Each structure stands twice: as C-alpha cells, then as structure tokens.
Image 1 (tube, helix red, strand yellow):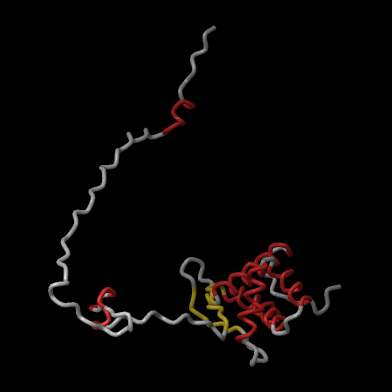
Image 2 (cartoon, one colour):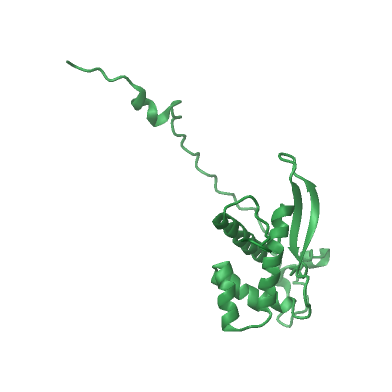
Length: 190
C-alpha cells in the first residue's frame, strides 16, 4: 500500500519525473534563477533545499550524494565551493518562488524559481569623459598624466579600410533540391 507517499507527480512516469527534477536542479544551480511552471517549481523546491543543506557540510560522502543527484562534477564543485558558502549563515529558505502570471498558450501558472542569495557580478562602470580622453601613450611611467609637446604629437591619418571581396553567389537550388531525382519517373525498358 502507498500510505503517506505523496509527491508532486507532474503527470509523468517515474523516470521522466526524476529526469525533470534533476534537470531543473542543474539549471537552477547553473543560472541561479529559472522561469518555469508553478507546479514544477513546487516539486523542485524540497530537492534543492536538501541539496544545499547537504553541501553546507563539506565531506566526501556528501559530495558523492550530491553527484548522485546532479551527475556533473563541475556543478558539485560549484555547489560546495561557492553556493554553500553563501548560505553558511542561513538555516533554511535557500530558494524562493515568485509567481509571474499565466502563460499565454495553455494558461499555466508561471513562476520564477531563484536562489535567495544570488551572486551578482558588478556592472562595469562607464568611463568618465576625462578617462576617455586620456591616451595610454601620454601617461608617464609614474602613472601621472602628462601632455606631450606639440612637436611630438603626430597627426593620425585615416588608413583606407580594405574592401572585402564580393562574395560569389552560388546558384539557387531548385524547389526540391536533391530530391528532384527521386520523383522522376523511371522508364522501364521491357
């Protein structure tokens, strides 16, 4: 009997269900944020929570258990070296589910599944106008900016850009391309 064996079935056979969950766990660890249906997000949540809790204790046995779920050595090392360190001060609640609305085609409820501690890569700051005007050749060895005398300045002339050769056009293929010979009637010589 199957007493107390409830799970999110996702309308799939067991092997398909496991593959869906494993694929979503891999995607979530890789991209830190994925957009999926609400049912799939709720199904993946307990698995990824257990995986991150497992990664907080760095041991060979835990790495092997994580590899059994993820099947990727790079993701296991990313999980143990980067993601688990972000959640070291947190006892739970490693991911969040944000509802996005309904999908247009089948009206399925969409959700954004993301890690709560997202590693943000700093945006590149734009150079100021003064930094843009500084030429690397004009900088002195000490790192201070100096201007060269007017006699040393060279007037740069525009060099002619090499023109590309005109691309040779291949003759366009017929409607059926290489299949034309298949549909041609063969005359039997009897």
